[in-house]
Amino acid sequence: MPPKPPSPNLLKITLADFIVRAGYQMGKTPLLPILAASLGASDVLLGVIVSVSTLTGMLTKPIFGVLSDRQGRKLWIVLGTLLFAGVPFLYRFIHTPGQLVMLRLLHGTATAIYGPVTVAYVAERGGKRKAERLGWFGMARGGGYVVGPLAAGLLLLWNDPADVFAVIGGLSLLAFIPVLLLEETKDDGHPTAGRRPQFPQLAIRNSLRIPAVWLSGGLEATVYIATYAIKAFLPVYALTAGYSTAQIGLFFSVQEGVHLLLKPAAGRAGDRLGYYRAIALGMGGLAGLLPLLTIAADGWVLLGLAALFGACQALIFPATVALVADQIEPEYLGAGLGFVGTLDNAGKVAGPVLGGLLLAGLGYAGMLWLLSGLLLAGALVLVLFPVRAKRLRAGGAD
Image (cartoon, rainbow, N blue to C red; front, top):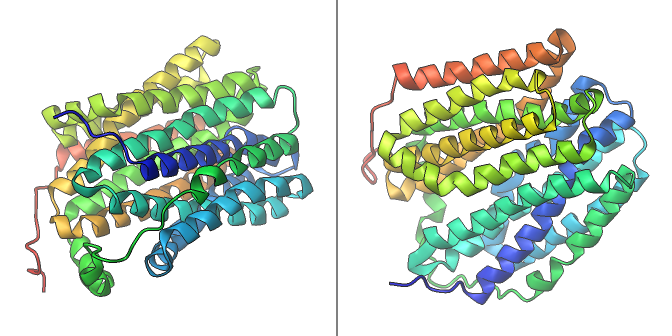
């Protein structure tokens, strides 16, 4: 049966998400660390600046998800787009690291809204092809991580950071075109409407009893600690090592591009090898690659390492999600993956902060070696202590 063309509303929300995510990533890497360093931020404070917007999402995503359930998805998508488009123009008025921290808190609210609300919008309209629709939506969202860093690196060759943020705001305004044309989601017949009241008490409690939820979330958090520390500090280190901003931006674009393109193939490899082996292989590969960043001889070697980084990440993340889906009842899958997402965000917050502390105490090479050891420990846990499947029966935990 040939694939059904995506609906107009799916195309609109996908285009809007791609536009704002690409702009947001332009402002995050390598632009934000360079701006923070130019304002005199210390290594530790730089880590806080990079991670604080993720902390906003970790704390508020459930709130915005509930509000969109009650008030409609489109309203909150419009509000999120307004923040994505408006906040970048405020960076021109930032003069201290403390002011930058406060603005990043506001900017992070945009991703906290878009994260749960846009996915819910797509899922409600997916019909019998929810996974397929969400898969295409996820690939388009990932495209912003590829385009953003490279575009920012190139713009920084001729513009100062404040001007680049103004460009980001202008580009993000284009997202209003598809967003304002979206149809509102109807509440009638929502498949989970009858279960919403018991979600906090039943679904979360039962999902947290599945060992795979904790294992998957803990492993993903470990990977994010390492990768987000690199996002925060590689731009500044690479500048001192003689690389241009374009080469730095290209590193992150290649990393995310390979990660995105190899996801389907790596997921199939995980199905064949087993999820534990795929995750262990990816984490072990990352552990071996991190120390090599200090000895990259030229830009081509750096880009080769970026491609290998992306390949290892592609092995890890489809398998961790599949691991949870394989070991939890379908009615608790959303709760389980939601908790995994909370742990993910915790890793994204901790990574730059921990990296800053390690950098201040041990230097760049010492930071990379310790992060490498953390990843290797996670891989060994999978090899030595695989968690057996333990599925819950619906309602059985009560």
